[in-house]
Length: 161
Image (tube, rainbow, N blue to C red; front, side, top):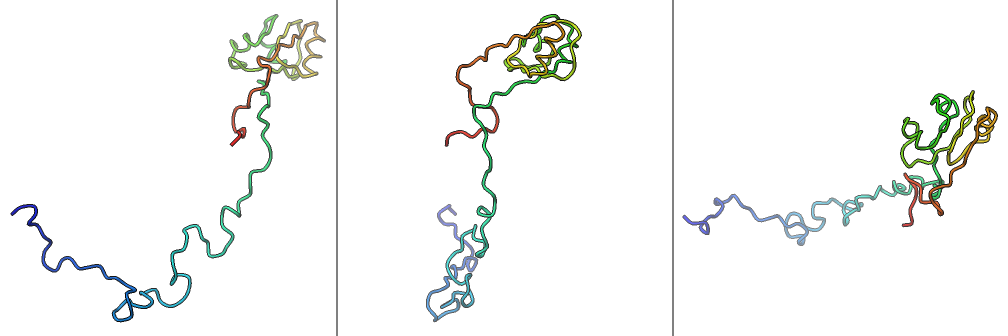
C-alpha cells in the first residue's frame, strides 16, 4: 500500500449539507433560520448592540488639558536643608544626600526654619523660603534653567498625532 492508495473508510465521509438550494429538499427556502427577524437575515456586526447606544459612544471623551511645556521641580523644604548641616547648599549636594535626583530642577519651599546663615543655590524659591533663609542671615542664588525653550513634559503629555 502506498500513500496515494489511502482513502477514508466506506461511509465515513459524507458530503456537506448545502442549505438554501430551493424548496425541493430539506433546508430550502428559509434555510433553517426560521421566519423573519434579524437573525433570519445576513450577518450582524460583532459590535452591534441591538440598537442600544454602542459602548464607544457611551464612554466620555478625554477631558482637560496637559501642558506639554510644564516645568517640574523637585521640592526641598527649608527644614531638610537646615538638617544637612552644611554652609553652602547646591543641587549637587542635594543629590549626594538623596534629596534630589541627578538632573532634577530644585525648588526650595518654606516649611521649617533655619538657625544659621547658609547659602542656597537652586533653580526656584518660594517667597516664604527666601524670607526664611535671608532672615537667618543667609543668601539665596537662583540658578539658570538648563534650557532656552521648555522641553515637552514627561509622563502622559499629549503629543501631536
